[in-house]
Length: 169
Image 1: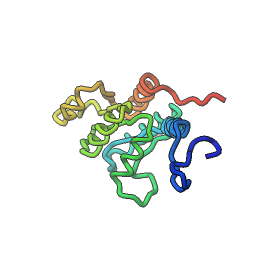
Image 2: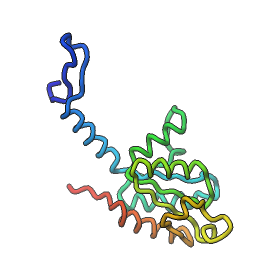
Image 3: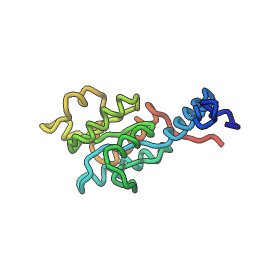
């Protein structure tokens, strides 16, 4: 109340209301919170470990924290936790090399929230029989040859579409 973020909502003072200044502060805090994380949506199995490492490296080099839901400690149900992490991320990187319905769902949710979604797929799958689903294939994707190529291309795409997360001191 002293800072102007809350006011008493009734005469007895037992109900508080968020003021316009309070909503501005909430919006500012949400923006700050969501500016430092990139969410990774992909199939998690042994074959994808090197892909995941390339994602993490590129995201980190751009100044963001890479977030994989399977590496986060929590006691919640997984889907609400995924949705929460996507909502607080600046962007989402999706791998469709190994098709995963969850990753497609997460990409759609991120798009609906207005997040930048970066689709990645290895070239032999992208151009072969295991081609990404029609809905994803329409979006410009990073089609990569090896993990070094993936890391380089992802860094450039984040820099061009999201921007580097460089803090000025």
